[in-house]
Length: 254
Length: 311
Image (cartoon, rainbow over the protein chains, first blue to last red):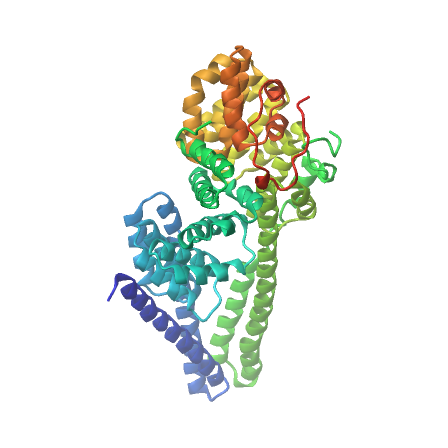
């Protein structure tokens, strides 16, 4: 069993426990409420059941919120490169009780991001694949697809990358996500030799590249320069490569 | 400044004064959901205890009330919560669109979106801060520096998230420099540098400091710190290298070193258009007139090249 499969199995186990507890509490609440219309002795038991169910429900929600608050620190920890701490936090959350399945999917998504920055791309692709196969529509769909796209590109799985690119192109994406998609698409097009396609809509791509950080800016321009060279447009290639070199810190040939 | 001036958004006149934007967009106090829920819970629990032990004659009314009153209140609250969540999501989408337009320098579409957003109380204080940040950038882009400084001062006084303080202070320093308030700008830069030491914002400080040196005519300082400032900027906001290169060209030109000025101006115009650079830093007009800009391949231009000439 791969480490990602173990994480997914753990997630599934705790998720089904959460679901069982949720439905049990609801059933107890309904049965207890119905018992309130019955004779005195049963009525007492009904009141007790309803009060107990309500108290357990509130206590479990408090536990869920506490766990969610703790897990919410993970993205910050990943950004600060404190990977061990983020891993410990996420493992505790995934292997713990929660009443909110959507939070748990978020924790799984954060684990996929962690695997990506740790260069464990196969695990990242497995985890995001699992998130995307979830029946419910989640707010993590677009970010998870982006992470999966980057992971499968790293793994050289061009067919999967093509499928993800097609899906992502159908979403109206904000600028941040569009910038990441641009970088991934340029990598994919370079890998399959679609150089002319890389240069299509160049002004808009250059504008989008400006919103990336310095590293992304340099990479996007280097990909475009390579596409221009392969399309036999040396002046454009030189201009793009000079931009990339200047921002990356290697001296451009001015 | 009149709308339609070269390099400025044609919708500049739509932007309200800072006092109006800040006051109207302030969120209303939150609806007291927690006390309502507590009251609901208390009624439910109290009723349950009464119905279990109380008088059998009044029991049936109490039982019905116990089950249905909290249920109706909870249903009403969940309906209200759903509506609020949808409005909250819509507001977030709208703010993101406005931010995206501003990031792509499309202020002509960002400002018309921003005006209705800031014209009424916003739901989330964080969305409001993001919208007001775009508002400040739009004011700067429109050359309304005095109003931009006022807006930033009020925002900082109201309190903003820690991540927003350095970019706002950098914008304030730039605005003060454009207003010719050099002493205040110098103080703002000192504060910004102090923040830069703690966080990762030295790039903003580097560009603002270089412009301070241009405003004070200190070309030696620009050249002395050029390499170090470029390293700072290169690590974070690569595109802003154009500003530093352009200011280095200005410093070389002041020292009558034309080849060096041309070299740096060529690097600056490789990353940004001379028109944009002169709009941001009018002092560079002399450099634009003296040094040829790096030619831009025609296929990289959205519209055919306009015949812009330095004044």
